[in-house]
Image 1: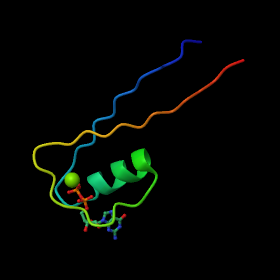
Image 2 (image 1 turned 180 degrees about the vertical axis):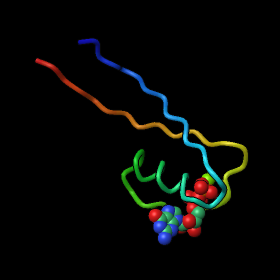
Image 3 (image 1 turned 90 degrees about the vertical axis):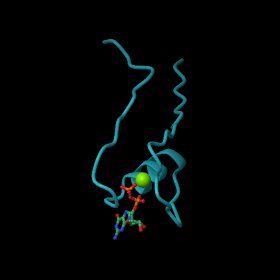
Image 4 (image 1 turned 120 degrees about the vertical axis):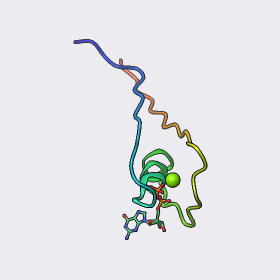
Length: 53
Ligand SMILES: Nc1nc2c(ncn2[C@@H]2O[C@H](COP(=O)(O)OP(=O)(O)O)[C@@H](O)[C@H]2O)c(=O)[nH]1
Ligand SMILES: [Mg+2]
């Protein structure tokens, strides 16, 4: 079975629905305390390490 080593997720939606908060929580593992307006777009990265023996 082929494995994916990189996945890109595009999050779209109306302003104020919680996109930045959700992405921050998923990528940084912590709640975004004081979200500000996103100008244009933002990029966040989550790195997962997987070791096989
Ligand atoms: N009640 C509630 N408020 C949320 C939730 N997620 C985000 N918010 C609030 O909704 C507002 C907009 O969030 P933001 O992440 O900036 O939305 P975006 O414009 O879609 O990126 C902020 O005041 C957040 O604190 C949630 O799950 N529940
Ligand atoms: Mg935003």
